[in-house]
Length: 429
Image (tube, rainbow, N blue to C red; front, side, top):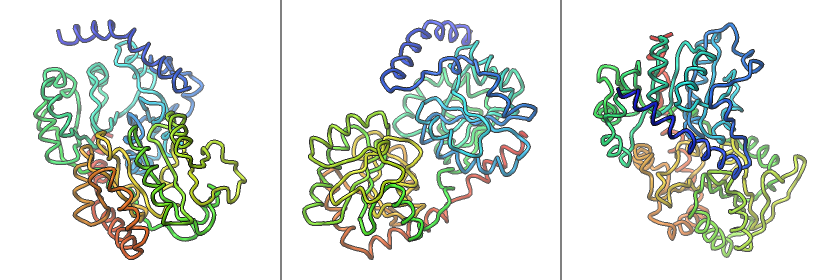
Protein backbone atom coordinates (compact mmCIF):
# COMPACT_ATOMS: atom_id res chain seq x y z
CA UNK A 1 0.00 0.00 0.00
CA UNK A 2 2.80 2.42 0.92
CA UNK A 3 4.56 2.02 -2.41
CA UNK A 4 1.34 2.38 -4.40
CA UNK A 5 0.64 5.71 -2.73
CA UNK A 6 4.30 6.78 -2.95
CA UNK A 7 4.48 6.13 -6.69
CA UNK A 8 1.22 7.96 -7.37
CA UNK A 9 2.63 10.92 -5.43
CA UNK A 10 5.94 10.65 -7.34
CA UNK A 11 4.04 10.80 -10.62
CA UNK A 12 2.08 13.87 -9.47
CA UNK A 13 5.27 15.63 -8.35
CA UNK A 14 7.19 14.79 -11.50
CA UNK A 15 6.12 17.96 -13.34
CA UNK A 16 7.16 20.43 -10.60
CA UNK A 17 10.43 18.51 -10.14
CA UNK A 18 11.15 18.83 -13.87
CA UNK A 19 10.33 22.55 -13.79
CA UNK A 20 12.66 23.00 -10.82
CA UNK A 21 15.55 21.21 -12.53
CA UNK A 22 15.05 23.15 -15.75
CA UNK A 23 15.00 26.40 -13.80
CA UNK A 24 18.23 25.44 -12.00
CA UNK A 25 19.94 24.53 -15.24
CA UNK A 26 18.94 27.77 -16.98
CA UNK A 27 19.71 30.03 -14.01
CA UNK A 28 23.10 28.40 -13.41
CA UNK A 29 24.06 27.92 -17.03
CA UNK A 30 24.47 24.16 -16.69
CA UNK A 31 22.84 21.21 -18.44
CA UNK A 32 19.85 19.70 -16.65
CA UNK A 33 20.92 16.19 -17.74
CA UNK A 34 17.31 15.05 -17.58
CA UNK A 35 18.08 12.05 -19.77
CA UNK A 36 20.51 10.63 -17.20
CA UNK A 37 18.17 11.46 -14.36
CA UNK A 38 15.55 9.32 -16.11
CA UNK A 39 18.04 6.50 -16.56
CA UNK A 40 19.03 7.09 -20.18
CA UNK A 41 22.81 6.72 -20.22
CA UNK A 42 24.41 6.63 -23.71
CA UNK A 43 25.86 3.21 -24.53
CA UNK A 44 29.10 4.82 -25.66
CA UNK A 45 29.73 6.00 -22.09
CA UNK A 46 29.22 2.49 -20.70
CA UNK A 47 32.28 1.08 -22.46
CA UNK A 48 34.41 2.11 -19.47
CA UNK A 49 32.55 -0.32 -17.17
CA UNK A 50 31.79 -3.14 -19.61
CA UNK A 51 32.48 -6.74 -18.60
CA UNK A 52 33.44 -5.88 -15.02
CA UNK A 53 31.53 -6.08 -11.73
CA UNK A 54 30.42 -2.58 -10.74
CA UNK A 55 30.64 -0.76 -7.42
CA UNK A 56 28.29 2.22 -7.47
CA UNK A 57 28.96 5.05 -5.00
CA UNK A 58 26.48 7.92 -4.69
CA UNK A 59 27.48 11.29 -3.24
CA UNK A 60 24.86 14.04 -3.39
CA UNK A 61 27.04 17.12 -3.74
CA UNK A 62 30.49 18.56 -3.06
CA UNK A 63 30.77 17.80 0.66
CA UNK A 64 29.73 14.16 0.29
CA UNK A 65 32.03 13.74 -2.72
CA UNK A 66 35.05 15.02 -0.80
CA UNK A 67 34.19 12.83 2.19
CA UNK A 68 33.96 9.82 -0.13
CA UNK A 69 37.47 10.28 -1.52
CA UNK A 70 39.30 8.09 1.06
CA UNK A 71 36.73 5.35 0.48
CA UNK A 72 37.07 5.61 -3.31
CA UNK A 73 40.85 5.31 -3.05
CA UNK A 74 40.52 2.23 -0.83
CA UNK A 75 37.98 0.65 -3.20
CA UNK A 76 40.23 1.21 -6.19
CA UNK A 77 43.21 -0.29 -4.39
CA UNK A 78 41.33 -3.25 -2.88
CA UNK A 79 39.18 -4.11 -5.91
CA UNK A 80 41.21 -3.28 -9.03
CA UNK A 81 39.12 -5.62 -11.18
CA UNK A 82 35.88 -3.77 -10.41
CA UNK A 83 34.51 -0.74 -12.25
CA UNK A 84 33.62 2.22 -10.03
CA UNK A 85 30.62 4.36 -10.92
CA UNK A 86 30.10 7.61 -9.01
CA UNK A 87 26.77 9.41 -9.11
CA UNK A 88 25.78 12.87 -7.92
CA UNK A 89 22.59 14.85 -7.55
CA UNK A 90 24.02 18.35 -8.02
CA UNK A 91 26.02 19.84 -10.85
CA UNK A 92 28.74 21.05 -8.46
CA UNK A 93 29.11 17.56 -7.05
CA UNK A 94 29.47 16.22 -10.59
CA UNK A 95 32.13 18.84 -11.27
CA UNK A 96 34.18 17.59 -8.33
CA UNK A 97 33.84 13.83 -8.89
CA UNK A 98 34.55 14.09 -12.61
CA UNK A 99 38.14 14.89 -11.62
CA UNK A 100 38.57 11.82 -9.38
CA UNK A 101 40.95 9.36 -11.06
CA UNK A 102 39.51 6.45 -9.06
CA UNK A 103 36.19 6.47 -10.89
CA UNK A 104 35.44 4.86 -14.24
CA UNK A 105 32.14 6.62 -14.91
CA UNK A 106 30.25 9.63 -13.54
CA UNK A 107 26.47 9.80 -13.82
CA UNK A 108 23.58 11.72 -12.29
CA UNK A 109 21.52 9.85 -9.72
CA UNK A 110 18.09 8.96 -11.09
CA UNK A 111 14.88 10.56 -9.93
CA UNK A 112 13.13 8.23 -7.47
CA UNK A 113 10.55 7.64 -10.20
CA UNK A 114 10.03 3.92 -10.70
CA UNK A 115 10.81 3.70 -14.45
CA UNK A 116 13.92 5.87 -14.01
CA UNK A 117 15.21 3.78 -11.09
CA UNK A 118 14.59 0.49 -12.88
CA UNK A 119 16.22 1.67 -16.09
CA UNK A 120 19.33 2.93 -14.28
CA UNK A 121 19.78 -0.22 -12.19
CA UNK A 122 19.28 -2.43 -15.24
CA UNK A 123 21.83 -0.36 -17.17
CA UNK A 124 24.55 -0.12 -14.52
CA UNK A 125 23.94 -3.58 -13.01
CA UNK A 126 25.90 -2.85 -9.81
CA UNK A 127 27.23 -5.61 -7.59
CA UNK A 128 27.03 -3.17 -4.66
CA UNK A 129 25.63 0.32 -4.04
CA UNK A 130 27.20 2.65 -1.47
CA UNK A 131 25.22 5.78 -0.56
CA UNK A 132 27.08 8.52 1.26
CA UNK A 133 25.63 10.08 4.40
CA UNK A 134 21.84 10.07 4.67
CA UNK A 135 20.17 9.77 1.28
CA UNK A 136 17.02 7.68 1.66
CA UNK A 137 15.03 6.85 -1.49
CA UNK A 138 12.27 4.22 -1.14
CA UNK A 139 12.01 3.13 -4.78
CA UNK A 140 15.73 2.93 -5.32
CA UNK A 141 16.38 0.86 -2.19
CA UNK A 142 13.47 -1.46 -2.85
CA UNK A 143 14.35 -2.06 -6.50
CA UNK A 144 17.98 -2.72 -5.62
CA UNK A 145 16.88 -5.27 -3.01
CA UNK A 146 14.60 -6.97 -5.54
CA UNK A 147 17.64 -7.48 -7.77
CA UNK A 148 19.72 -8.82 -4.91
CA UNK A 149 21.96 -5.73 -4.89
CA UNK A 150 23.27 -4.83 -1.40
CA UNK A 151 22.81 -1.15 -0.46
CA UNK A 152 25.17 0.22 2.18
CA UNK A 153 24.71 3.61 3.80
CA UNK A 154 28.21 5.03 4.39
CA UNK A 155 29.35 7.81 6.72
CA UNK A 156 25.74 8.22 7.83
CA UNK A 157 24.75 11.07 10.07
CA UNK A 158 21.59 12.72 11.35
CA UNK A 159 22.17 16.25 12.60
CA UNK A 160 20.51 17.78 15.64
CA UNK A 161 18.54 20.08 13.35
CA UNK A 162 17.16 17.33 11.13
CA UNK A 163 16.56 14.63 13.74
CA UNK A 164 13.15 15.97 14.77
CA UNK A 165 11.99 16.06 11.15
CA UNK A 166 13.19 12.51 10.57
CA UNK A 167 11.28 11.31 13.64
CA UNK A 168 8.06 12.93 12.43
CA UNK A 169 8.37 11.02 9.16
CA UNK A 170 9.69 7.76 10.59
CA UNK A 171 6.66 5.99 9.09
CA UNK A 172 8.01 7.04 5.68
CA UNK A 173 11.73 6.36 6.13
CA UNK A 174 11.40 2.91 7.67
CA UNK A 175 10.07 1.54 4.37
CA UNK A 176 13.32 2.51 2.63
CA UNK A 177 15.66 1.74 5.52
CA UNK A 178 14.47 -1.85 5.80
CA UNK A 179 16.09 -2.54 2.42
CA UNK A 180 19.55 -1.30 3.48
CA UNK A 181 21.97 -4.18 3.96
CA UNK A 182 24.15 -2.16 6.36
CA UNK A 183 24.07 1.34 7.82
CA UNK A 184 27.53 2.66 8.71
CA UNK A 185 26.94 5.67 10.91
CA UNK A 186 29.52 8.23 12.02
CA UNK A 187 28.87 8.05 15.76
CA UNK A 188 26.97 5.99 18.33
CA UNK A 189 24.45 8.86 18.57
CA UNK A 190 23.88 8.73 14.81
CA UNK A 191 23.38 4.97 15.04
CA UNK A 192 20.76 5.41 17.78
CA UNK A 193 18.96 8.03 15.71
CA UNK A 194 18.80 5.97 12.51
CA UNK A 195 17.42 3.04 14.51
CA UNK A 196 14.84 5.34 16.10
CA UNK A 197 13.52 6.34 12.67
CA UNK A 198 13.17 2.76 11.51
CA UNK A 199 16.48 1.15 10.57
CA UNK A 200 16.95 -2.48 11.66
CA UNK A 201 19.13 -2.27 14.79
CA UNK A 202 21.16 -5.35 13.87
CA UNK A 203 22.32 -3.71 10.61
CA UNK A 204 23.28 -0.32 12.07
CA UNK A 205 26.92 0.24 13.07
CA UNK A 206 29.04 3.11 14.37
CA UNK A 207 32.06 3.11 12.03
CA UNK A 208 33.45 6.63 12.39
CA UNK A 209 33.65 9.64 10.14
CA UNK A 210 35.36 9.22 6.76
CA UNK A 211 36.20 12.91 6.78
CA UNK A 212 38.84 12.19 9.43
CA UNK A 213 40.69 10.03 6.91
CA UNK A 214 41.96 12.97 4.88
CA UNK A 215 45.73 12.38 4.56
CA UNK A 216 47.55 14.86 6.80
CA UNK A 217 50.62 16.46 5.25
CA UNK A 218 52.33 19.78 5.93
CA UNK A 219 52.55 21.90 2.79
CA UNK A 220 56.22 22.33 1.92
CA UNK A 221 57.66 25.70 0.85
CA UNK A 222 58.30 24.31 -2.64
CA UNK A 223 54.71 23.04 -2.98
CA UNK A 224 53.33 26.38 -1.83
CA UNK A 225 55.59 28.29 -4.21
CA UNK A 226 54.50 26.12 -7.17
CA UNK A 227 50.83 26.62 -6.35
CA UNK A 228 51.25 30.37 -5.97
CA UNK A 229 52.95 30.53 -9.33
CA UNK A 230 49.99 28.71 -10.90
CA UNK A 231 47.59 31.28 -9.43
CA UNK A 232 49.84 34.28 -10.27
CA UNK A 233 50.40 35.17 -6.61
CA UNK A 234 53.68 37.01 -5.98
CA UNK A 235 56.28 35.68 -3.55
CA UNK A 236 56.02 37.19 -0.11
CA UNK A 237 52.28 37.92 -0.39
CA UNK A 238 50.26 36.97 2.69
CA UNK A 239 47.16 35.11 1.53
CA UNK A 240 43.92 34.85 3.48
CA UNK A 241 41.35 32.43 2.05
CA UNK A 242 37.64 32.69 2.79
CA UNK A 243 36.35 29.25 1.78
CA UNK A 244 32.86 27.92 1.08
CA UNK A 245 31.12 31.20 1.85
CA UNK A 246 27.34 31.56 1.78
CA UNK A 247 24.98 34.53 1.31
CA UNK A 248 25.42 36.90 4.23
CA UNK A 249 29.07 35.96 4.78
CA UNK A 250 30.87 37.75 1.95
CA UNK A 251 29.97 41.21 3.31
CA UNK A 252 31.58 40.68 6.74
CA UNK A 253 34.54 38.89 5.12
CA UNK A 254 35.18 41.88 2.84
CA UNK A 255 34.70 44.32 5.71
CA UNK A 256 37.24 42.38 7.79
CA UNK A 257 39.68 42.29 4.86
CA UNK A 258 39.43 46.05 4.35
CA UNK A 259 40.01 46.56 8.07
CA UNK A 260 43.13 44.38 7.94
CA UNK A 261 44.52 46.34 5.00
CA UNK A 262 44.75 49.44 7.20
CA UNK A 263 47.48 47.85 9.34
CA UNK A 264 48.89 45.09 7.13
CA UNK A 265 50.65 45.30 3.77
CA UNK A 266 51.38 42.64 1.15
CA UNK A 267 48.00 41.10 1.89
CA UNK A 268 45.46 39.54 -0.52
CA UNK A 269 42.21 37.63 -0.23
CA UNK A 270 41.10 34.47 -2.03
CA UNK A 271 37.31 34.29 -1.91
CA UNK A 272 35.68 30.94 -2.68
CA UNK A 273 31.85 30.98 -2.68
CA UNK A 274 30.36 27.60 -1.82
CA UNK A 275 28.31 27.72 -5.02
CA UNK A 276 30.33 29.12 -7.93
CA UNK A 277 27.20 30.25 -9.74
CA UNK A 278 27.00 33.02 -7.12
CA UNK A 279 30.22 34.52 -8.45
CA UNK A 280 28.35 37.24 -10.35
CA UNK A 281 26.63 38.41 -7.17
CA UNK A 282 29.88 38.23 -5.19
CA UNK A 283 31.66 40.19 -7.92
CA UNK A 284 29.06 42.93 -7.41
CA UNK A 285 29.90 43.02 -3.70
CA UNK A 286 33.60 43.35 -4.51
CA UNK A 287 32.92 46.23 -6.88
CA UNK A 288 30.77 47.92 -4.25
CA UNK A 289 33.57 47.50 -1.69
CA UNK A 290 36.04 49.08 -4.10
CA UNK A 291 38.38 46.08 -4.04
CA UNK A 292 40.31 45.11 -7.20
CA UNK A 293 39.62 41.50 -8.14
CA UNK A 294 40.02 38.88 -10.82
CA UNK A 295 37.85 35.82 -11.39
CA UNK A 296 39.59 32.45 -11.49
CA UNK A 297 38.18 31.70 -14.93
CA UNK A 298 39.77 34.91 -16.23
CA UNK A 299 43.21 34.05 -14.87
CA UNK A 300 45.52 33.29 -17.78
CA UNK A 301 47.52 30.08 -17.58
CA UNK A 302 50.80 31.90 -18.10
CA UNK A 303 50.04 34.97 -15.97
CA UNK A 304 52.66 36.05 -13.43
CA UNK A 305 52.48 38.45 -10.46
CA UNK A 306 49.02 39.69 -11.33
CA UNK A 307 47.87 40.22 -7.78
CA UNK A 308 48.93 43.29 -5.85
CA UNK A 309 48.48 44.40 -2.27
CA UNK A 310 44.78 44.51 -1.35
CA UNK A 311 43.54 42.52 -4.35
CA UNK A 312 41.13 39.58 -4.43
CA UNK A 313 41.02 36.31 -6.37
CA UNK A 314 37.38 35.29 -6.80
CA UNK A 315 37.21 31.53 -7.38
CA UNK A 316 34.30 30.71 -9.68
CA UNK A 317 35.25 27.07 -10.30
CA UNK A 318 34.88 23.80 -8.40
CA UNK A 319 37.45 21.23 -7.32
CA UNK A 320 40.28 23.63 -6.43
CA UNK A 321 39.65 24.29 -2.75
CA UNK A 322 42.39 22.04 -1.37
CA UNK A 323 44.97 23.70 -3.63
CA UNK A 324 43.68 27.10 -2.52
CA UNK A 325 44.00 26.10 1.13
CA UNK A 326 47.53 24.82 0.48
CA UNK A 327 48.79 28.15 -0.85
CA UNK A 328 47.22 30.14 2.02
CA UNK A 329 48.72 31.55 5.19
CA UNK A 330 45.38 31.70 6.98
CA UNK A 331 41.86 30.48 6.21
CA UNK A 332 38.30 31.21 7.23
CA UNK A 333 35.91 28.25 6.82
CA UNK A 334 32.53 29.56 5.72
CA UNK A 335 28.98 28.40 6.28
CA UNK A 336 29.67 29.20 9.93
CA UNK A 337 28.84 32.90 10.30
CA UNK A 338 25.31 32.22 9.07
CA UNK A 339 23.11 29.31 10.24
CA UNK A 340 23.81 26.88 7.39
CA UNK A 341 25.62 24.32 9.54
CA UNK A 342 29.28 24.96 8.71
CA UNK A 343 31.77 23.09 6.52
CA UNK A 344 34.61 20.63 6.96
CA UNK A 345 37.30 22.02 9.26
CA UNK A 346 39.50 19.00 8.61
CA UNK A 347 40.39 20.15 5.11
CA UNK A 348 42.62 23.08 6.12
CA UNK A 349 43.80 21.17 9.21
CA UNK A 350 45.02 18.27 7.06
CA UNK A 351 47.35 20.65 5.23
CA UNK A 352 48.64 22.40 8.34
CA UNK A 353 46.84 25.67 7.52
CA UNK A 354 45.68 27.69 10.58
CA UNK A 355 41.99 28.51 10.30
CA UNK A 356 39.11 30.46 11.81
CA UNK A 357 35.42 29.53 11.87
CA UNK A 358 32.18 30.96 13.20
CA UNK A 359 29.54 29.80 15.70
CA UNK A 360 27.16 27.92 13.37
CA UNK A 361 28.62 24.41 13.09
CA UNK A 362 25.60 22.16 13.71
CA UNK A 363 26.41 19.88 10.76
CA UNK A 364 29.96 19.39 12.03
CA UNK A 365 29.40 19.46 15.77
CA UNK A 366 31.63 16.44 16.46
CA UNK A 367 34.49 17.79 14.32
CA UNK A 368 34.15 21.24 15.88
CA UNK A 369 34.39 19.78 19.38
CA UNK A 370 37.53 17.87 18.42
CA UNK A 371 39.09 20.97 16.81
CA UNK A 372 38.50 23.00 19.96
CA UNK A 373 39.74 20.18 22.21
CA UNK A 374 42.94 19.83 20.16
CA UNK A 375 43.41 23.61 19.86
CA UNK A 376 43.60 23.19 16.10
CA UNK A 377 41.47 26.19 15.09
CA UNK A 378 40.03 29.47 16.35
CA UNK A 379 36.29 29.99 16.73
CA UNK A 380 34.77 33.48 16.70
CA UNK A 381 31.42 34.32 18.26
CA UNK A 382 30.14 36.42 15.37
CA UNK A 383 31.14 38.37 12.27
CA UNK A 384 32.52 41.21 14.37
CA UNK A 385 35.17 38.90 15.76
CA UNK A 386 36.55 37.93 12.36
CA UNK A 387 38.91 40.88 11.76
CA UNK A 388 40.41 40.87 15.31
CA UNK A 389 40.99 37.10 15.14
CA UNK A 390 42.70 37.41 11.74
CA UNK A 391 44.80 40.31 13.00
CA UNK A 392 46.00 38.37 16.06
CA UNK A 393 46.99 35.37 13.99
CA UNK A 394 48.72 37.41 11.31
CA UNK A 395 50.83 39.07 14.00
CA UNK A 396 51.52 35.91 16.03
CA UNK A 397 53.67 33.51 14.02
CA UNK A 398 54.10 31.18 17.01
CA UNK A 399 50.34 30.70 17.39
CA UNK A 400 49.94 29.99 13.68
CA UNK A 401 52.62 27.32 13.93
CA UNK A 402 50.94 25.82 16.99
CA UNK A 403 47.56 25.66 15.25
CA UNK A 404 49.21 24.09 12.21
CA UNK A 405 50.95 21.40 14.23
CA UNK A 406 47.85 20.67 16.31
CA UNK A 407 45.68 20.36 13.20
CA UNK A 408 48.03 17.89 11.54
CA UNK A 409 48.27 15.80 14.71
CA UNK A 410 44.48 15.80 15.12
CA UNK A 411 43.91 14.49 11.59
CA UNK A 412 46.58 11.80 11.89
CA UNK A 413 45.34 10.52 15.24
CA UNK A 414 41.63 10.26 14.44
CA UNK A 415 41.53 8.19 11.26
CA UNK A 416 40.48 4.57 10.75
CA UNK A 417 36.90 5.01 9.50
CA UNK A 418 37.84 3.94 5.98
CA UNK A 419 39.10 0.54 7.14
CA UNK A 420 35.99 -0.01 9.26
CA UNK A 421 33.81 0.80 6.25
CA UNK A 422 35.90 -1.48 4.03
CA UNK A 423 35.41 -4.37 6.44
CA UNK A 424 31.64 -4.01 6.04
CA UNK A 425 31.90 -3.62 2.26
CA UNK A 426 34.13 -6.73 1.97
CA UNK A 427 31.36 -8.86 3.48
CA UNK A 428 29.14 -8.05 0.49
CA UNK A 429 31.68 -8.34 -2.35
